Structure formats: C-alpha cells, structure tokens
Length: 177
Image (tube, rainbow, N blue to C red; front, side, top):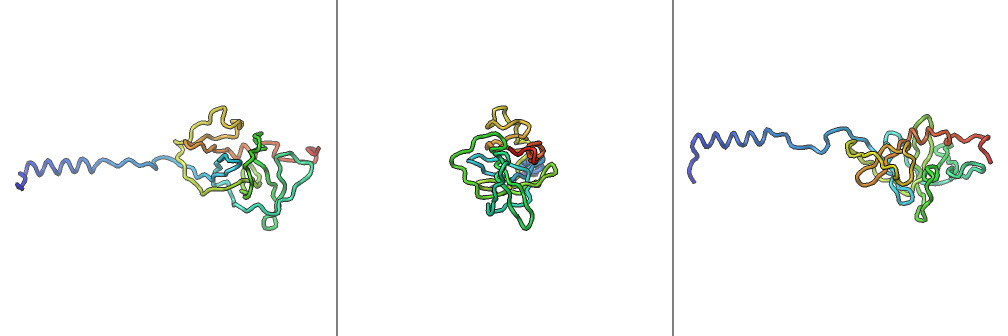
C-alpha cells in the first residue's frame, strides 16, 4: 500500500472533518408531553402525567343513589372520599362488552380531584408535541372540547381541565332524580 501524498492526506482529513461537523439528527428535538395511557373498554385515552396523582386498584367502590349514570360511586383512599366516574359514560360513549374496570386513576384538574375507572393503566409515555395531531371531528364520538389531539398510534389525548371543568362533574342535591 502506497503512502498517501500530503495533498491526499489533506483531502481525506478535510472530508472527515466535513462529515464529523454535521450534527446528527435527533428524534427528541422539540417539546414533549408526558402522558399516562388509560385503557378503557379497549380504547386508549392519554392524560397529562402531571395531572395523575396515583393509580389504585378498584376496591371498596360504594355506589351513590340518585347520581348521574357516569358516576360509578365513591371510594375511600387513605381516609379521603373521592368520586369515581366512568369516563366513557361521561363522554357519552357506549360501554363496550369487554370493559372490566380494575384500576382507578386519581386525577386532578380544574379544582377537582376524582377517580377515573380504567381497565388498565400503562406506563408513562413521552410524546413529542409535534406528533400530536388535531383530532378529527369524528374521533370516537368524543366532543372536541375534551380532546387535545391524537397520536399517530391513535391514543386520544384528553384535556382534563375541560373534562373536569364541565359543570356536569359537580353533582348536587338539586341534580338528584
């Protein structure tokens, strides 16, 4: 093998420097949101992880008579009583036959802390904001004011401030039927 000439060495080194000076593309460029996926009746709904206080097994749920259909009941968690809701019923969606709530996600938004029934709760996911598309108007029949967007793998990202801020979430004696 021949020894390269000084001109060839310079050309090789300049080419290497040019290649190495280009910053590699990074997938994580841009803002991200941490999302907790709640699987409810076979559908996945994502909620902002900062609004999820904890996940509890569904135990000791006490039905409350004369409440709206979406109110599953109340639950005592370490001495505090929380209302627990069927999110799909609140959103006006029919229950699926394969739904079997086993978990309660304790969420806080709009000045309320409530439990949301879920069949499963997956690990927190980091989703690039640029990957969240506006939800089409026909997205699973959910009113658009409750939806922040949808991910490429069809996780519907909910706006918990809008959901919990809905006046129907406050049930009073006047609402009893």
